[in-house]
Amino acid sequence: MTCSSNNPLVDSLGRVHTNLRISVTDRCNLRCFYCMPAENVVFRPRHELLTFEEIERFVRVAARLGVNKVRISGGEPLVRSELPVLIRCLAKVPGIEDLALTTNGLLLAEQAEDLKSAGLQRLNISLDTLKEETFQQISRRTGLERVLEGIFAAKEAGFEKIRLNAIAIRGLTENEIVPLAKFARKHDLELRFIEFMPLDADQAWKPEEVLTGQSMREILSQAIAPLQPLSRADLSQPAVDYRFTDGRGTIGFINPISEPFCGNCNRLRLTSEGQVRNCLFSSKEWDARALLRDGDTSGHDSDDRLTQLLRDSVTAKLPAHGIGEVDFHPPQRAMYQIGG
Image (cartoon, rainbow, N blue to C red; front, side, top):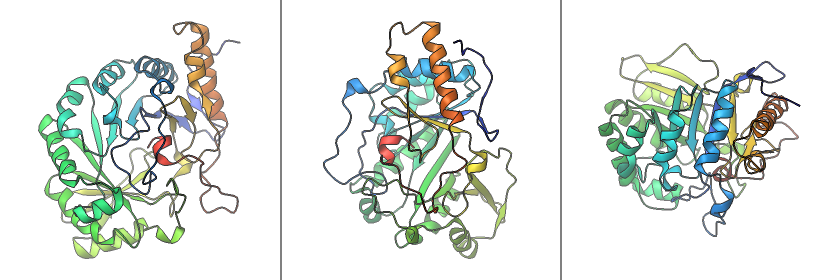
């Protein structure tokens, strides 16, 4: 069977998949409770992780099928040795137009220049709070000042598109919303708040802990300035963006719980050990690593099988993640094991 057609990856609902999230490691130097256990984390041995060559080959196959956006994640991707080498390879893949990375920022000050020179275009930096005490409560580690140093080092390195991601948790981060927005406005950074999702390793998530996008918009409108919704040039983007009416900055809200955006989802995920997932909350995976390591890694037949694997995963994609439905079950793997 030949599956080398370059037709795009379209699912049964007509959603065209052009966005690929790639985890390069499940390791992290923080232990954020919404992502990882506090202690005794068992990480995958290095030989189980995809090599840079295997990742590049997978991306080349995906790019021939219309994937044009790639985001590198983890765990914490900057703990993966020599990551700029991978960035440089992926930046050269024909068809890849947008290359981004999500990081907690702890190691960014040391690596920002190398990542920029390697061809990385955009950065997402996790910043849930501007208070060290709250930072430690969330991450169960120290390091807020290092994160801030990483943000400013990225600006100094020439990154023009830096986005701050803040997880919103009722009962914990309400008092962080306004300071984070003011910080982003002051330093000309984009800020996005993300509703707390059931992806924690302890599976302790509760619906009542979700601080909704609407609640945050009301807080910001009263404390800073009214917010005006912006038109969405790309309907597949998960965030709904707003502009402060005083003209100083924009802010986005990713509301997977209160306002699911599954109808326009165009994303696929590749875990650090080479499993393809068609949804963050998928209960099924497709083993790309087995194909990447089966025989001649440069053979067309193997690439055809990778193509078919990608098509199979997209064809099997469900209409929505199902959070809030009676039969919803959180994924057996936590966020750090899947990739952001």
